[in-house]
Length: 240
Image 1 (cartoon, rainbow, N blue to C red):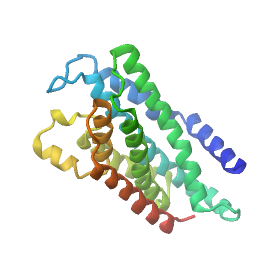
Image 2 (cartoon, one colour):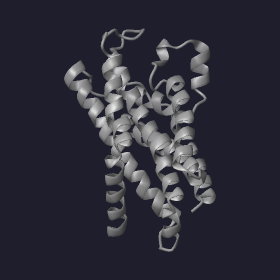
Image 3 (cartoon, helix red, strand yellow):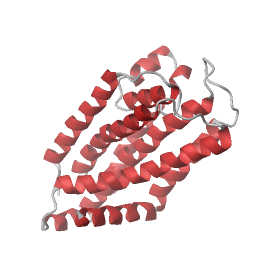
């Protein structure tokens, strides 16, 4: 237990010390919420913009951490032969994945807390109507998107390639799934496409919990299924 805790602490320090990772996971979402809430207009239907955008952008933060930063970190370790050295130790892919996941999720959690603090202090953010669903949606969203990030990081040979692939997956997903643009503001065809993306269940569930609507069991099962399938493939396909 002590060993894995030390690994997590080291990984977290390395992530935070990387200026680009720290900026995109912590500063960039706070800049986005300021830009999006400047006009203060409610969404179609009367929902205050802040009550939609803070939950949405929390999934944005998770997506950055899991789809862009996480696979790039693993690929950089492979490129620098850190993984080859780990191969000579008792470390397993599961242990490495676990330490990486916890470290990146702690960073995503910090980014989410910053969003909530800014929303509450600066824009009168309402408290979540169902905190349990909000937390569950956050965790399931993190697990499902992490599986995809681990799958990328398991096989990509270099950090630069992983970053390009991660961004190629991340940006279309966040814009169409409702993590940046509220679904109420999209056309029907764009919503239909966004509903098929892996990020959509997380966005919909966390918003439902925040606004007091019932969570969809199908959405939660989809997130769990994505996590199990992608993580299993990632462990089997992992290249040291």
